[in-house]
Length: 86
Image 1: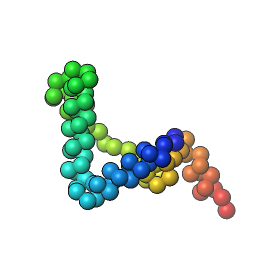
Image 2: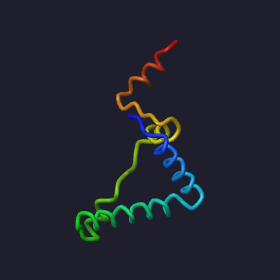
Image 3: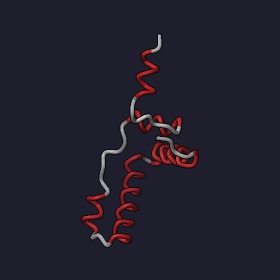
């Protein structure tokens, strides 16, 4: 999976904001904004929207690769090939 340079910059920006202002604080704002969007666009009640906005995030390697390189190899081929080289 490839992401745009703009999305890569946004990921870097949001992780910097988390480091500056607290990751839990920023995550809470994002979850609330997502729940509000679900309520506004799909007519969900707040309880359902908030339950729908909870998750575990991305795998660590995926997050780092997308943030730093704008690319994630979900097949794992590029990672295996790099380990197999002598």
